[in-house]
Length: 166
Image (cartoon, rainbow, N blue to C red; front, side, top):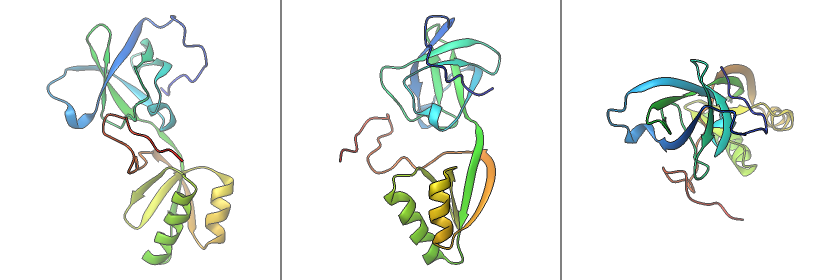
């Protein structure tokens, strides 16, 4: 079940997710439930959510973190919740050759569009302006549905800290 994205993050939730633990730092935490989140909702600090088991909770972290598929959230009662990347509508971008694909990726990156690199193709979220630009540059586009786990970039630390100031 996808996350609720309502602006109301009141105390209606019965539990609070108060700590984020990246998958690569996991030890032997016992996981009792999971939460399926879109790419956008995996980059939040505070949000009302409903787990796969139907439990109402509030994401209530100290700061925004970049959660990835397989990360854990610790609830205020000490239990752990697994983060699952939700399938979402994306665009698969491919090109006739490697040089053309690199050029397309440069144009996407130059516009600060999140992208997931995958060998001879990459994925972006739906955006008719970017899609039109890519088609104009000779890209082959295919709409698909899959989890989106975009690159975090050079200014991202594993703890979700860091900055990218212009």
